[in-house]
Length: 241
Image (cartoon, rainbow, N blue to C red):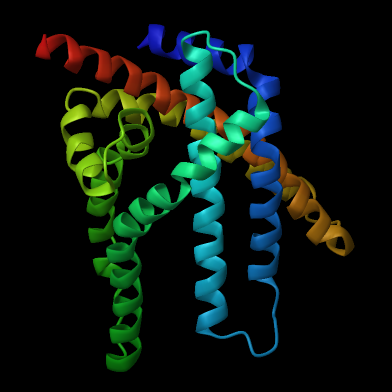
C-alpha cells in the first residue's frame, strides 16, 4: 500500500504542471455548468436540467479520458504535448460518456422513482436509500472500465465486465488509496466554504473559485486509480503468460 501511495504522489507531483494545464479548461467548464445548474432560472424544466447533466457528463468524460491519455504516456516516459493529450482524450470521450451513463442511469432512475413514489404515497422512502450504497460497490468494481477502453481498446460493455475481474484483489486498495486523497480534499473544500460563508455578496465567485481549486487538486484521485490499475493490469498479463 505504501508503494502505491508513493508512486501516486510521485507521478502526480512530477507531472503536476502538465496535468493542471490539460485539466483546467474542463474544470472551468464544469464549474460554469454547476453555477448555471444552481441558479433559479425562470422556466427551468426537466429538459434543461437533463441537458446540463449530460453536458457535465461530457465534460467529466473528456477530462478523464484526457488525463488517462496523458498519464499513460508519461508513465512510460513517452513525450506528449498538451495538444496530443486533448486530441487523444476527445477521441475516446463518447465511449467514456456512454459508459458513465450506462453505469449511472439505473441509480438515477432508482432515486427519482423512489422520490416520486414517496410523494404519491406520502411515505418516507429514506429508509430504502441505504440500498443505493450497494450500487456504489458496482461503480467501484467498474472503475477500471475507462482505462480498459482507452488503453486496451475495449468496448464499453466489455470494459465494464473486464473491470470486475481486474479489480479482484484490488478493491480494498482502491477504497483506501482514493479515501486517502478524497477525504482531505473534501474536508478542505468544506472548510473553505464555511470560512467564506460571511461573504454572501461574493458567494458565486467564491463557489466558482473553490470549485476550480477543488477540481485541480482532485486530479490526484485519477492518478491514484491509474496507479492501482497499472499494477492490476500487469499482474493479469503476467498470469496469461
